[in-house]
Length: 119
Image (cartoon, rainbow, N blue to C red):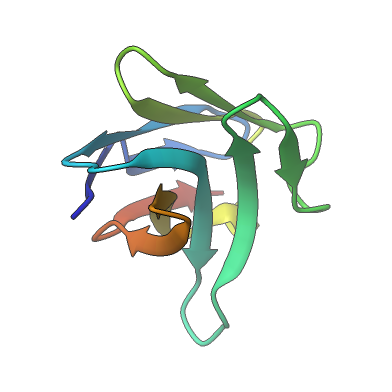
């Protein structure tokens, strides 16, 4: 069972930056993708960005050009560099991972980390 531990959330001013980290452990197979979702109060959870094991990335339109996702494979840690933050980025951010074990995919979620942007 994959365990995801997030860190790096907190309070930032508008225009500032934060970097989220997500460390994965306990995989019995291969982690093929990692990503970040977020959920703001009263809103549905939405994809922020994801990255595949070969480096393909995908971003929500609202963060394109401001956020960068990366994956340090030796450390099994994914990062989300968030720049030019605005109040609309305030949300709980969740790390996700897709693991493949014997041709079966499993999805895992972290506990979430709060990001608050003050204007």
